[in-house]
Length: 418
Image (tube, rainbow, N blue to C red; front, side, top):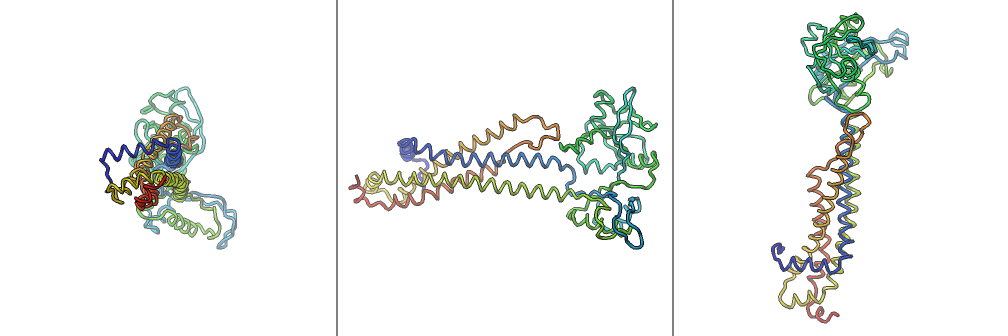
């Protein structure tokens, strides 16, 4: 059993380490650098992952469907070059034929149109959406309220605007309860939203005006046409499978050749999210590989210094054994020396790594634009604890050979050692 609370043992350990300061410092630096590199690499990897994941907000398994390019393959007597228009009956068919669908949120657009309030006019994109899309896209409510089901059912002439629209048309004032006018029709502003994602494509949503989809379609005579669908699967349903099923149903309904790709455009958010997760899993494994390699190099150094220490202290160890010290006590002393050296070095490496990560986090500019691909670098407690545990185990293993050599010293031979 290790003599953890024997002050004489601790005094002896530190005396041995101080006896060769340069050698001890160089060996300790190898261990320090291994833990430091692990913490910095893991923290930087987490920062990159946080930045990438900021582009995946709301429902990460959503499928988006829209009318794509014209048909390029003649099919069932129909010529090529046909444009496909999605409609309400398509949505009904998807619900009936694919029970794994949880929600379908149709949306429409009007492109860029002049929007004015009081004496200010600016061009913004008009979008008709369903309330569920706000949740699925991860929009953040800044003022007022979101659109709701009553707005959809009653085709209310209300809108939610992006933050850029508010800042330009209303000079940053609270626009809730005020009106805007577009294409000759007035609409009441009920809320202001902003995208949670920092990506450039998401930041463009701050320049949009959002209508209840039914309001936009009835007001601007879009009838039963659907420009895009956001489809959310039920829990446990694979989005890639759902995407394929939706493509099959729509191609059958609109008589599109099965090999005519791109006519029904689609985007599977889960596919990209899974790809990003796999990428950063690889980065974490690489970080551990590099750091553990460095730690092993440092621990080998610890093993070497223990071997040298045992050789230099052969006579001392022989005297202790002659006075009654057991092999177990000798082994315990060598193990403690090794563990103390690796732990202290690793602890300072951990502290230095965390300090660098925290400093980098503080010096980073505020995450307000899509250019920030690196966000909130951090190191979790589990990783730090695992690193220290690995270090202590490695330190103990490195000291096994020197400890066994020390335990095997013959007192008679040792006392004759010069």
